[in-house]
Length: 308
Image (cartoon, rainbow, N blue to C red; front, side):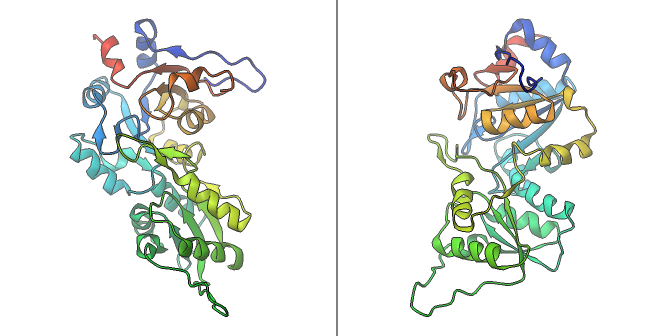
């Protein structure tokens, strides 16, 4: 439902009683972002359990698509369970999983290694996919020694560097990743996502993976392969899994530049919730050219209109 190039953008519609039934009836699968939509940090957003239950009762397929790479699908399933939500690993598509699946999709040589600037989630997904990961949390306290005649050694067998959200990013990791990309022939530079900020806690936004990716872009003078939203890689993989036409999907998210663009790029319906990064002022700003089909304050607004 995204506007064609050169056409006049249609203003987003506020979710209301006169359009919610049409949206529900025309949608077979709802794709939800997590941070700012389902939870903030480790705090569940009000009304989410009841909303998801209502959608499941109506026979809707639910999929959770997150750019946050700090956890694996197994770890995310555990977080959902801890918050009282029954969500299976098969319903979760994280950018950590997407990075591993991208490497599989290009037949990345299993004897090659992957250096990770990011969290445990990426390393776990790489291992499950049959790849050897280096770095991550193990390099959190390492220091690069800036001394005369000091050669920084790196593994010449690293064939890809994956960069995601890393709260322990340091100069050592940046040097290691930079050397691999610049000096190892054919080494890939993969970004889980380029989100500027995210709701890492329930009270504030924090710097996102985009900051770490930008640092490596600066030192390597290269642009990454992005596997998370708004890249269509996760959508292509998801479509192979579920065989549902994108016109019968609705992407629900709190970010215009990732969630809504992700849905629009694939031809999905899009619903922006104002419970996370994007507020009404940003949405209605004349400089904003990303327009969702619908918007509402939070996902539980569905409940107020659903009486059947």
